[in-house]
Image 1 (cartoon, rainbow, N blue to C red):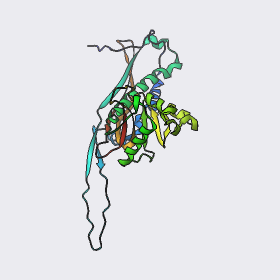
Image 2: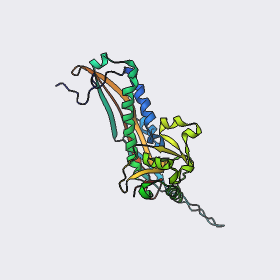
Image 3: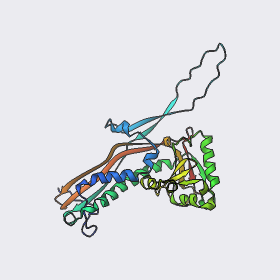
Image 4: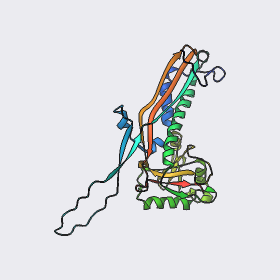
Length: 297
């Protein structure tokens, strides 16, 4: 029995152009360019991509170690190594697919190679970001925003105090701050009292960096990113941003972005699909704080 394509095909009505076969590199390029969160968390991809099998990674968590005083004539006491593990499952197989009918192929223009490669690459990037943020949204610690859900200097300083009290090394270059567009507007607003501490990328000649990675500047040495993945809802309790250490979440890709295509005689067109296989898992918990979220009130 013939299999029929289901979905929204590209036709001369929906698009008058076609992307040539060399578009595979373009899809991966736009995926890498638009993925924000993957570069901000621990990446264990090498552990699964090299093996090519297995669907779980056990990540050890070690508690803080304290020093012990030694009295003259006393023996050293050796504590047993105590670790717990968090399991990262490679359980997310996501794809985007499109059918390009022959009529669209014939009437195409080669200068639109980037159009669909960008759309498909960005779609996969948004999905990866959404899945990583879904984990970070569950950070154990949170700070309430100020009145009208505003990010003020006082709220930011409370977040830093929380991180410091929980031994999170927020000045080691491994912490990031990600906010929704509303909180980013607060950062730029002089009346919120935080703008004076914010260093914008374009002010230091790094304006293009934000276009590539979503990074918009820094606060107290912490890189700041703006992302639409973070909810802009004003609902009470919804997380509108967070500061977190790289080790707060684990990510692993067992199969990076892959592009495949075949001709469909039934549809008289070329089917193209791009997919990847990965997993994400929060590591932060009450015994091992790795970040703090900003919550609406």
